[in-house]
Every structure is written in C-alpha cells, then in structure tokens.
Amino acid sequence: MKITMMILAILIYMGVMIYIGVRCSKQNKSSDDFYLGGRKLGPLVTAMSAEASDMSSWLLMGLPGVALISGVINPGGFAEAVWTAVGLAIGTYINWLIVAKPIRIYTEKTNSATLPDFFSARFGDKKGILTAAAAVFIVVFFIPYTASGFAGIGKLFNTLFGVDYVLAMAIGAIVVIGYTVAGGFLAASQTDFVQSIVMTFALFVIICFGIENAGGLAPIKENILAIDGIGSLGQYFSLTGTDGSYSFLPIVSTLAWGLGYFGMPHILLRFMAIEDSKKLKLSRRVASVWVVISMAIAIFIGVIGLNFVLSEGWINLAGETAEGFDAERIVIYFAKDGIANLDSFAAIIAGLILSGILASTMSTADSQLLAASSSVSENIVKRFIWKDMGVKWQMWLARLTVVAISVIAFFLALNPDASIFRIVSFAWAGFGAAFGPVVLCALFWRRTNKWGALAGMVSGAVMVFVWKFVVRTAAKGTFLDIYELLPAFLVSLAAIVIVSLLTAEPEQEILNVFDEVKALCKKKDTDPAAKENA
Image 1 (cartoon, rainbow, N blue to C red):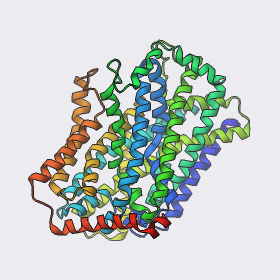
Image 2: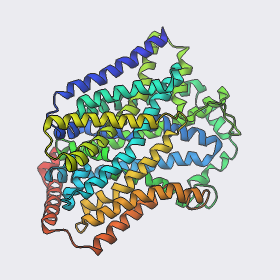
Image 3: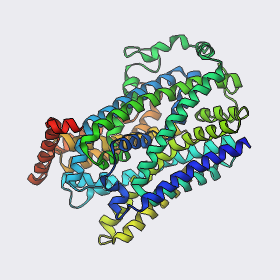
Image 4: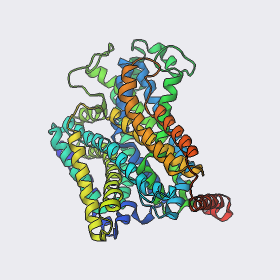
C-alpha cells in the first residue's frame, strides 16, 4: 500500500508536468514562440526556471555523491565539492549582474531567438558560419548532458522499486519529451518553476530525515573525525598550501566552474526571454539566494550520507565499498530506508521527495532538449537547407528534432555505472569554454569581430577535449591535473583577442548597434523611473 501511494504521488506529479505542456501548447504560434516563449517570462519564473534548468540531477545526486564518497576515499574530494559550489555561486551572481540585461536588450534589438542567431547578428555573419559552428557545439555537448539526466531517472526507479534501469529511463524520457514537445519553451520554463519548488522541498526534508536517521549531529561529527587523515583536512582549503591535492592551482581551477555560466545556452535563453529587463534585479536576487542555499544543503546531504552508509556497512573507513554501491544514489538510499516506517500519508510525502529528484533531472533535460533542437531545426535546417519553410513545418521540425535528440541521449545513457557528476562537468566545461568568452566579448568589447569569435569558439571547444583526454590523462597527479574549463576558457579568450586584432575591424553598422545597445543599458541603469520599477 505504501509503495502504491508513493508511485501514485510520482505519477500525479508527472501528470501535472504533461498538463502544463499541453496548456502551453496553445500559446505556440510559431517556432520563435516554441523556442523563446514570445519573451513573456515573469521575474520569478525567469529566476527559478534558470536555476532549476541549471542544476539538474547533479544537485541531488552528483554533488552529494562527490561530497560523500570522496570524504572517505580521498578527503580532497570533499574540498572539490565545496570549491565547486563556491565557484558556481559566484558565477551565478556575476552572470545575472553583468550578462542578463545586455543580452536581453541585444537579442531583442537584433531579433535573435537562439544563441547561435545572436552570434551571427552581433558580428554581421551573413553566411551563417558562426551559426553553424555554435549549433554543432550545442548538439555535441548537450546530448551527453541530457543523457546524464535520463541516467538520473533510471537510477532513481531502479534503486527504489527494482524497475529495470533502461525501462525506468524510457518512462522518464517519454514524460520529458511529452511536455517539451507539446509546450516548448513556455512549458519548460513553467514546469521548471514548479520543479524548483519541489526540489527545494525535497532538499529540506532529506536533511531532516538524514539527521534523524543518524541520531543527531553528534554521531555525524564523530564518524567524520574518525576518517583517516581527516585531521589535516584544512590543507585542502588553503590557498597557499603545498601539500595535498587542493592547494592554489586546483582551488582556482575548481572555482572556474563559475566561468561556465557565461556560455550556458539554456540559462542565457532565460535572460533573453524575460518580459522586462528592468525586472532582472529581482530575478538576480532570487536566483542567487536559491543557488547558495540549495548547494549548501546538497553538500551537507553528502556529509550526512557518510554516517548513513558507514552504519549500513556499504562503505568502511578504509574506503572499501560494498558491491553495487553507488554514492550518487545516497538520496535514494535515504528514501528507500525510510519506506518501511512510513504510514500512507508519509508515503505520499516520500513520493513528493522522490519527485524532487525527478524534478532536478527533468528541469534540465527539457531545457537542454529545446536548446539542442533549436540548433538543429532553426540554425542548421532552416538556415541552410530549407530556407522557405512554412510555419507549420517549422513547428513539426522543432518537435521531431526534440524526439530525435532524446533518442540519441537515451542510448548514450544505457550504462548505469556512468558518473553523473563527471558527465556534467565535461559538458559544462565545453559550453563554458566554447561560448563563455564569445558572449562576454560580444557584449563588452566593441572591437571583437566574427573571425575572432569563430577562433575563440573552436579553440575553446577543442581545448576541452585536448585537456580532458590528453593533458590530464598524461599528467595525472601533477599540477596540470586541473579542471579543463580553466585552460580552455583562457585559450578561447586569447584566441578572440589575437584574431580580432589581426583581422579587419567590424563594419560600422555593427559598431553602431553595439553603441546603441550600450547606451540603452546605461540609460536603463541611471533612469530614476527605471530604478523605481526595478
């Protein structure tokens, strides 16, 4: 009966998501509506949908898993979780502060509905070279990112109910595809808003359950202090330390997670879609507070989970793990352990908690599917292959592309042992390095031209692969064994500057638009009426 009540709660949650998608489908009159929602998002939906689409299953599974398992096997891994969260918190705030308003104004001025569209419009790329390159990189990095979300769904139902991993993934993928295909961007944004609330509820309840399960905070502290070498944990948080894996350079490279925000298409789309740029201040505050609180709780879940798995015998202080144990499933283990002691009402609450894990996964997968779909249908097919495509066919192509990309991501996620954290970190580095420097230079450096943007985009993406699979592999354990986003971001930025300076200046028409957007940004910042409304 309890299991039935939990499953019923999850099914109701999924049904609500599909209902929102169907309702939003009536507002989609064109492919621009499907991909950008007619720029009608309110400030709260903008904030929470941006952050919910950002965090994914990484928040409730990846980050707690790193904090948990690394605390036993490698204390430096706990520092990795903390410094990653710090970098993301800083990056979130700065991105909202300096990028949100200019890109909202610029994309409306240039009538750009996607990030590749913006690049071509900003740099006067009439042949669409930047559009094509950006679209290809979006597909390359978003497919594995989406696959990590499907994997999160599979792990949830496989661990809790013994449902076949592949079947569980298929059910979750069908739901995500269903409401995304039906409602497009509006559906993704509104469901993300609801899902951010469910995720927040799940985080707090899991914390309370974990502390109660451990018998309070004291036993948790005792188990942590009992870990070999934990007494020297401070060295992993020292910027000047020379011992251990977390001295100055590893800390800086991990903080570089924050640089990724400047190049995330699914987050930048939220900036582009808000109904009024003056309302971004409220969005920034809400988003920044939520990110800090949610990541702090996620790491604490990993700490509490350490006590839980030690007591269950799934891991010991020597770092040896039981067969089949997966640190990224710690939240699911909590839920499974508590089912036996639940009454029917509590089972419904547990179902909502598990829906929070689904929410963290689905809220990112839908946004990624839309961004990847727009790259294929709008920026490749419509731009280069079928230029006079009618509105009806544009909508069909958009929806079919979502399905096709989902199928590819599904097959990439068939391995249940793949690490969600590591998959996300690679895709995050890819977007951050390929697009982050280009976005910043497009908004703030007048002299940037299309050749510099192209050089930065390609060099950043290529360097992520080179550093990840060549340099880090060969330099394991040395000072070069750092997160690939940092070196790739710097290489991309250098390429933009050097190539732009060595080639012709942008045309005067492009410079005029840049100056006009810059003036609009300044006017809105200094206008008393605008400040009052903000």
